[in-house]
Length: 381
Image 1: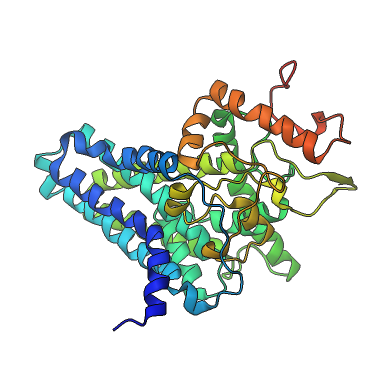
Image 2: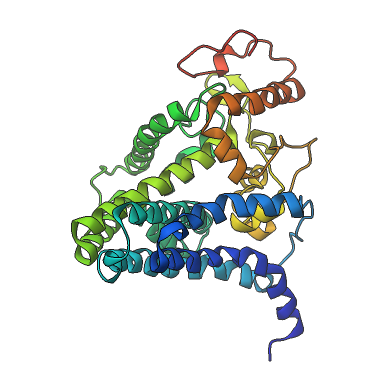
């Protein structure tokens, strides 16, 4: 019999397990086909947005003194997801290129794997983000496995060695610049993050007097895991299986970078001179307290606290009010959809960026040096 205190902890953690509901939705789409193949993006984007509208905000904060026992059921969801995603991804590749090939059209299969990419990006990469921040090697390895399933393993090096150190500065390719549309941001960050992550690991080895070809370079592990995933896709589904694997990986990375775009759009750290910037503070990330989407994203939207205290596990991340951190008007599902339409995005977010500037940095009158977008700001921006 489970002790009463464990039952209470489980009940508190259960909402964060809602991501598992996406697994039967994916299986349903593969088994039935037709209109059901669009359910994955609909549930991920719209269902949780509707729940946000109904349930509102969660402004409560967990007790920072909570011990490991209090976090067991929260931690467990991040540990069980990697094998579940592995089985789901390659199981679906096997099914649609084999037994299910007869009743699924090519279009239905492509749409289905678009949805698979939505969850390997929305859930998988997000869980890998939680795992890569932990001290336990096993957890970090599971994070690597998740990233290899979307061919974005270098995200770990980029995120830990570059993004957290240089967020809100021109040195961070992942910080979206003011007035930079997502469609310019996306190709820039794909190239920039790969280059910066490799250079960061190369520099770390150089400080030890070692060349980049040293086997301790994590890129060798990244490449090996990714090669294994690609080979497995071919062995299971042939060239069609490889195409579907690559397709879902692209969609997953697109989902990740949409979130990255939203998280720091237009926010910059103050330049102190001689290449130095102020310390990262909660005000340098957009915060969102929307309850349901934080369940889906295991509190990723409490991003202000994540950058302020990167070693906190997701259930302990604190919420910040409007006087402490800039707030998004909606959760990530709606905000990422808005980011795909730059005029809509600018109309919603540019006034908020200008308000943020007036609130935190009224002494800065010339923001042009902080705006590195290719096109100059429009008049009045």
